[in-house]
Length: 203
Length: 203
DNA sequence: CGCGGCGGATGACATTTGTCATCGGCCGCG
DNA sequence: CGCGGCCGATGACAAATGTCATCCGCCGCG
Image (tube, each protein chain N blue to C red):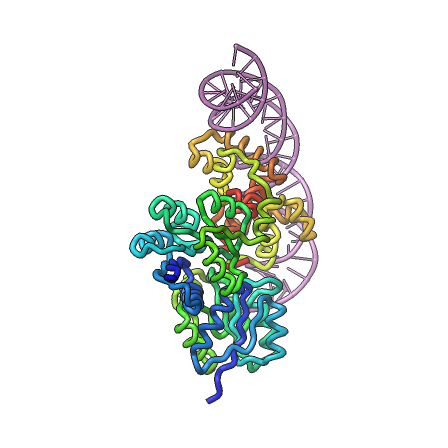
């Protein structure tokens, strides 16, 4: 049986290289390409057409989920999976919606990762049980589209006037959205609301 | 010549294992212990007395700099170095003050890391040039002790009343400190001030 | 000693913000 | 069609926040 062709994308050279070395020990896996950024991952995927793309969630250029979304249409035969250090519930949801078939934290061992790559390659899915539980208990975002959008624009702590300008909205409207978002999240002000939404992966 | 005994501390199992495997390829290095948290790193160091401790900056329990500080007094013969994904200028300063002899981002390759471990073991220092440049250009924190302290308490976006209570200060005083901190940082409000201070590693 | 800087506080004031009621338009659904 | 929900806005009001001047005590330094 021919080996599974793997694409590895992670911006941390140290980890990527180390990972490649460890996966090379598995004789049914072969790392055919490596990338250090989102766009580079896409380019490498197009060039090498891997069976499985292992993507870090946080990368410069485009994050893992964005890359997975593009790959889904460009290379339908390529399975994608996400590896991440900070597993937030919302990210898992977004990833699954993007057609990602595996979602694991970096706390797994290399052997486990290899096994999961095989699982994904076989067409099955794998999601870290802990993350899955978090995602289920966290539930869906109660925020409407605009609420989330405005909250994101306010994420850097900018005054409402700035946010309103960037959103092309009235200041009053922005305040209303932020107020309702904060109350939905149980926050006392928009800043803690931003933090809470971040923790749940809703922004 | 006897090999360099290395302690590896990183909470991400995947990376730690991969790193251990890669370092094992260097025949003058031997990983004698691994740890997944700050306290565990200390315990392992006491038990195995490594020559060099390679510490991740962000770990549960106690961060890399705290561990390095403890090691400095407990095991003076053990050189310490920090490996990190997000290299912020202030962290570098704190690390050097704690007696850390190496500070590198995770974007280096395994070969480079091995070389740096040797450098550190030989008693020399190594700091990533890019990070060093950032640290120098960022300069020292303009904040007074209390300003930084109050800013940290306000970091979660809590209202001033809460911060004042936690700091055992008057609300007016808290507002004054936050105001002066924000103006020193060139921020329009305390929330962006917090963000800026974070980016520079001053909190 | 005198000066300056910091910690801590108060009061007054302007500004920003949060909150609420209300309005209109649009769209989907029973 | 009528209802409800979301989007967008306005106005008014209360509360939180930012800003400034001023005060006191302490400590280090020339």
